[in-house]
Length: 77
Image (cartoon, rainbow, N blue to C red; front, side, top):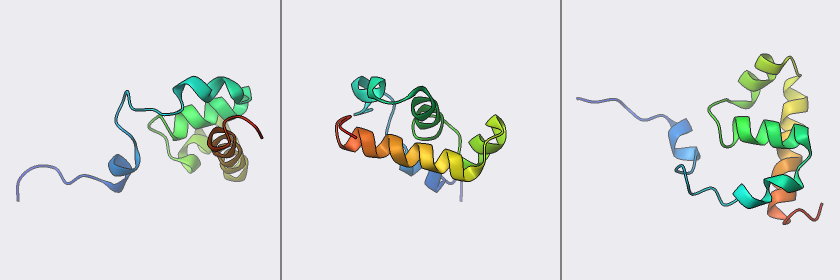
């Protein structure tokens, strides 16, 4: 077998330039936007980002959940 085996992480991320939320990120709080960009659009996992920012994994998870909810609702939450 030749080549590198792709990871699940690669399949969970949309291709660059195909972000459906780009224009809606301004509806998020600063903390929600920071976590969303780092985890959903960036290269961090939630726990890894929590360690990187000295936050608890629960805090990062809650911020990410709220950000996703706001973006799905069109910023209405």
